[in-house]
Image (cartoon, rainbow, N blue to C red; front, side, top):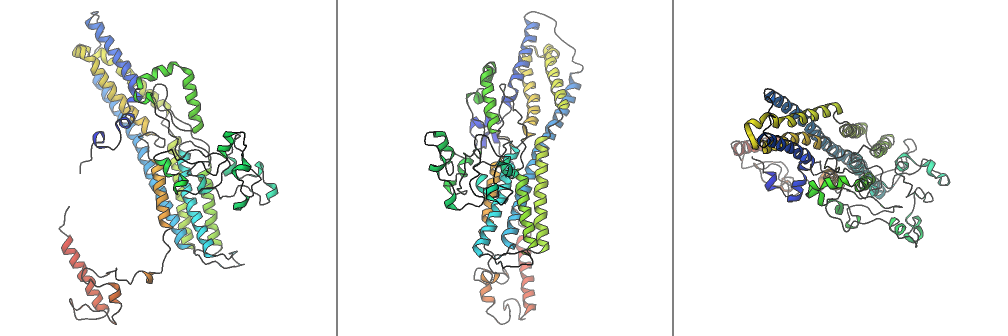
Length: 519
């Protein structure tokens, strides 16, 4: 099957296709080397100066640079591909952990002094299991923010999933304070939005502050920050999917405004007319303000010349903390005898794999290619493109200008593609769709919790089930009504021998009908 051409058959708009290319990254260099080629052509043809250099090394150097650039691009794509594989592993482990919790953790609980198990209703057990499944979902969401250098937990798609976790190390409500906060919450504190320590560790609905008691009537900013949950009614795309008013996430109390689930850089005129970035570069104040904004939201931005800027990885312990709570819950299940040892081993293995995947993703994010390698490769390419017009102007004459521009676009483009995809966790169009991965995991985990593990007798022996087809197309409900199985159309035997012959005939029918079928 021939894949479709993304330039013409993609659902992306023309503007998005343009922004997804590397033109924004390489246009200053292409323009510079084209100007050098124009200068060389003018000196030769108008000033009649001898600016021709021997071209003996041109082929050799071009071949070497081409191989090195190819290696650079291939190594970057390996990081991109490994990132995608690791996110697939996150999805697999999340499903496994959720399935183990939802299927194998029993609903019936009795008091047992020996194991420490406490009696609780079936409703409490279901709430317990669904809360842990939400915590599994929160792991992938926190990992997404971690890879995007967005620290803390106060995000519209993360906080509702983990807001029930304990905030303080002490059970004494009178001792609750900033010095007693657990690392998960302490690392997310901001000077402008301090946590209200008067709220109890296990609040009831009536004990939570209301907007009128928490806000200052004279401060519009405070009124907005103390709402139950800031909505996203004006947002589109992935952000709108996480709007709690649309029913996708819990709507819980929060003492401060939550940051958006997605905070990509805003697109403006400079993204469509990149040559105007030169004028922004001249105005240093604008650049500084843009830099401050980028640091606040922790997202990638473009420099004044269009290059993709690197945002340093933020210190954040949220994914690790969530794994610690999941491991603690696993230990509770095995010590109280709620799950057998083999199921416990499978559960802890999947959690260990999730932490291993977290470390591998962090390695990709925080380990760029060595600076010496990148600098030497780029300087070598610059020197090659700078002297290229001097070596080919004798052959190409005025065509040396478009020829140099094409060579610059080709070689610099492949070099920048490597730099673009070596860190695939941001908001660029060529980056991995981390938001889509998290939403897919959320859908799958909620689909798991739909199943209530009914008894097989309730759904197996019905008229919808034809277990022996195509040899015997009678339903399971009809088969169990007979005292002894027999298939009169195929043989006269009864009992298990007749069942075996029926299964053998089904194999022959399928083998005959499907062996030579090709699509």
